[in-house]
Length: 148
Image (cartoon, rainbow, N blue to C red; front, side, top):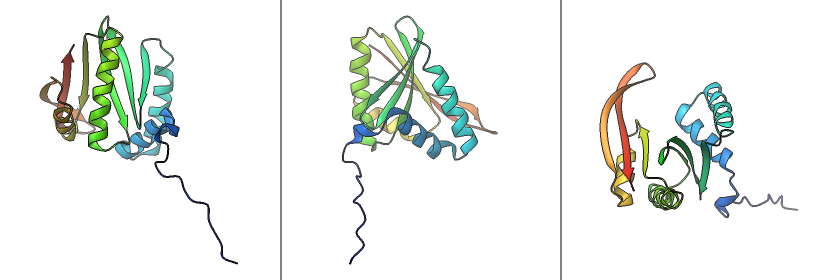
């Protein structure tokens, strides 16, 4: 008799990925150090206990939205989406933020690919480039901001 293995569900229902699994997978890809991943996950779990910090899950993307001032938020992104999927989720996020009264949103990245994704959204995003210490080296850092 032939040995039949169960079929794997790959991308059948992306919403079944819970927010913390998406975040953990994204951290593993970025950090490549299990101790840093676990430390980051513990820090995130602590952060989301505050009413000023919310996780917004859109498809295979989770946004950590942190209120910095009334009407102003900082956003951090964890995703398993294609660039186009991520751009679409950013557009959905801006609609959500507008609906809850946010007037200004900002995010940061040292990954130049996010500049292309920001352009793909078609949103009026202001991009500033500077340099910052990432690990033990100075690297380009991008700030993305948008006013509603």
